Image 1 (cartoon, rainbow, N blue to C red):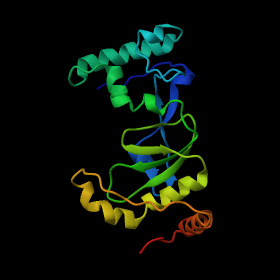
Image 2: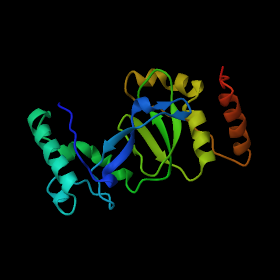
Image 3: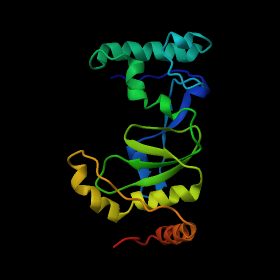
Length: 190
């Protein structure tokens, strides 16, 4: 499909984290994307964008025309953008999230600290309340132990059960020790 360029209102430009944006314990550079979602969380089509968003209306009109010409099947462009509600469900965007890559041979989980960022369908995400909670989850999800326990399930596309220990009062100290080890470039698993 040809690329689409043009002016767009700033409120519809969002950083987008793709599967390849996530490294073990680190979020890498997101791409900039046009996300046609209103402040209320409604996914806007070109007709809806005529109400005050001249540039978005023009951009969506051209995007819908390209989709109608080159897109597979009978699904509308905005239906594809919000497939199963996965886009709209991200709004209003939580400031803190843990993301985990769906694909790849090595596990990768990281914390996203950006209340404008949108998460691509190649990442699982979960809102968190505090950063230490996210570090705890990222350590577990990104561990070799978790990879080994789920590797036979990944190839089949099936879901397994991963038991995540409940956080307790000593957890922040354990997280600090793990983070210090990771920052030194040492492996935290054997």
